[in-house]
Image (cartoon, rainbow, N blue to C red; front, side, top):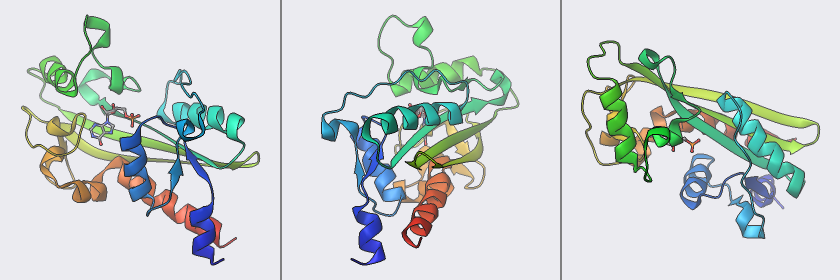
Length: 207
Ligand code: IMP
């Protein structure tokens, strides 16, 4: 078996229930096959009680590792807005839930963000991703990367997901949802973190 075959055949679990995230992470890691807990009939819904992205990524990875005892990768991401004191941060996925009596769409959430930013001049914000890889009891790696930018004055673009229509990427000089999917990977917090993780997995293959 070649080294490439070995690493591609290594069972790597992804601590998520989301097929879309699995496909994206697999692509970002260079085509690595990722198993979801549900593929093995495992119910997986740990409480994300951390106050940082790293804490939440570690919670998810440890929870899954304690069940499967095989290599596990997890991720946690969010948007921190300077003028809002770093909010929504680790609560990004649930932003606005405390004031709503119905399920909020992504659009509802980014429109609420724009409303809460009305009149704000310093609109700087940062997307962050933490990845945690547990290979065995004694070997784990954590990577955190970010994508700096600003909250736009109004939504624009149709690609991406979540807050992409209102996030202006400093390095690219455009709103995230205006970039084609593959191009966003070049600048995104997740793209940067996953490229580093891919290097780590490649190094693992050479051990
Ligand atoms: P998660 O931890 O990766 O699920 O990210 C938490 C939330 O942050 C998601 O529900 C999205 O709303 C938002 N988010 C994370 N990454 C991005 C991105 O690249 N673009 C837009 N929104 C994102």
